[in-house]
Image (cartoon, rainbow, N blue to C red):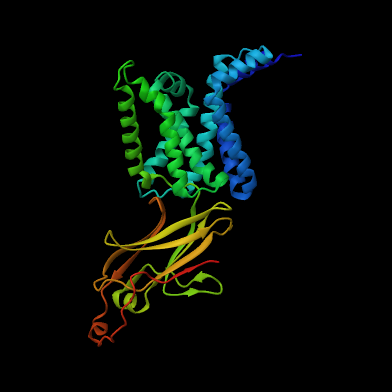
Length: 363
C-alpha cells in the first residue's frame, strides 16, 4: 500500500514531468466553473467557497504544515506548496478570465485590465516564467498573488454574499492591498521609528491610486444582455421599439428617446445602475435605476429622456455604469440637423420639463 508521503511525492513528480497537463486542467476547470456559475448559481456558491478555502489554506500554510506534522507525522515538502500555490493561481485566474472576457468593453480602459489578467494567466502556466522570473522576485510575486485574489473576489463576493458591485470592488481592493503589506514592508529598513507611519502612508497612497482607476475594472458579476435606443417601449411585453442609431434634431425634441437595457446579475443581488447621457463627450444627464438579479434574460429596465439641449446636433452616447463608475456597456447615436422645411414651421410652446426624466423598470 502506498503511503501518503509517497503518493504526495509521486504526484509532484508527475506534475513536474507533465506541466502542460496541469495548465490544461486549470483552463478546463475555469471554463467549466464559468458554465456552472451561469447555469446553476447554487453550484457557483460551492465553487466560491472552495476558492476562498484554498486561499485561506495558503495564508495559513506554515501553521497548517506544523499541525499536520504534529498530528500525522507527515512533513509536507516545500515543493508541494510551490506546486499547490501555482495550481491555485491557475485555477483562480482561469476561473475569473471567462467572466471578464464576457463583460469587457474593448474600446475602453477595461481592455488594459483584462489584458493584464490574460498575461497573468499565461505566466501562471509557463513554468520558466513562473518559477524562474516571477517566484524569486518576492515583491512582484506578492503583487501577483494579491492580483489573483482580487479578481476572484470581484466574482465571489456578489455571488456568495450578494454584495453590490461597488461594495465588492471596495472589499476586494482592501483585501488585496492588505495582502501586499508584506511586500511593501520588505522594501523599508527595519528598526526605524518612521517605518510604520511611512508604511501606512504608502498603503493609503496605493489604495487611493488604485481606486481612481476603478472605472477600468470590468463589473464581472454584471453583464449587459441588451441595450436599445427607441422612440417607444411596449409596456405589456416589456420590449423596445425599433432601434435608433441616427435621427434628426426635430424628431429628438418632439419624441424623445427611451434607453432600454437588460442587465444580467446573480440571484439575490440588488444593484443601483445609471444611464449616463453624454453629448460630444460631455455628461448632460444621469438617471438612476434599481435592478435585481436572477433573471436568465437579464433584468429589463428603461428610462425616457425628453429634455434635450436646444442645440443637440452631434455625437451622443448612453453609458450604463455602476455606482463606482464601472462601465457595463454603452450605445452610440448621432443627431443630425433638422430639415429646412421643419425649421420654418412655427414651434408650439411646450411646458417646462423637469430635469430628471421619467423612469420605468421591470417589476
